[in-house]
Image (cartoon, rainbow, N blue to C red):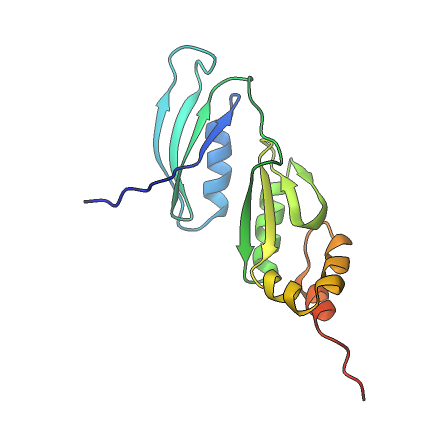
Length: 156
């Protein structure tokens, strides 16, 4: 028996749920489309309900019509181990969208993402002011400047 996922994010799109899912599934490993159901009538008519897994997390994308839009009040945080991983998600998700300060972006469908190094909490703990000052100078996050900010200079 498959284990039931207690909470499933449900993302509301105007008319491009399937295109959004195609982008997300192409970028994240361990991702797949589970099912696509066409919407026969209503505000999302001719749209789709797409059930998918994003890095193993089950989600649903729904073409519900133009009544609701995404805001920065809800975002997905992607914790990255390397600069290459940050770059992969940053460029893949921001292409056609908008880049914002401190590793935030909106994808082409308006959904907000935070692309951050997994070690950010430890770096912030080591030198909160210096790391935050460095972070505030960035749009796409670069790990090395944050590491330098977290490490006091070695005096000789």
